[in-house]
Image (cartoon, rainbow, N blue to C red):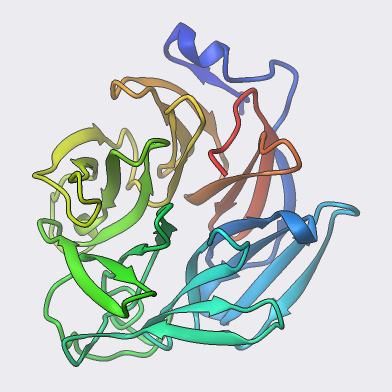
Length: 301
């Protein structure tokens, strides 16, 4: 397997020619939701079916179980104070890891109805938490607890912890999944994995302009269509390039939507995040394993 698949000269500037893809650990049933925790020099990620949160210590390369059971965590992010924000399939909620080590539930309902199973989240600079809510954690007992959808649809929500208010902001997707803001927060990118439930549904990332108020988004448009499998989780570097999971690789898109390169991975890729002291190590969760590669790009945070 080659390390890089260069589709556009712009990708050459984002890679280190002699850097190789490293398998750091294997043993998950479905690895997901990586988040880098700078203060701990560690990466946390989910092994959803095993209901455990894993930890990679980058000081010595060791891997350990950070917490189990954990409520079938999926995606994670950090807030401005460095606290980990979690999407829980089991609790059907968004929770936060406080500095004293306790988990606190933040929001689990919309107008009295329980969420499906929050999947991925991002924290905006104003402190609001935007998260996707497909049904994967309630579709069966494998990644959560089987249950009917109380809301009856899958949306992206904006939660304001200060006001305790939650509202749907993206309602035109079948199964919204990974999401991220552009560096200036003027654009919101969201992946739709609706093909898992609707045959031949397009595997796309859509992009939405954020309103001047920062509370809503405009009509979305297709940003990219997956070349293999589904887009799932993704992150954006400081130059606006999108590094996203696909069925057989990490695909990299320029801000104009051009696929400029791929990093082939020998398992189905679920998610990525930037880590390390310089945020130039791309961590990759893929099916049963955790991978990493150093790149010539830096994550937004």
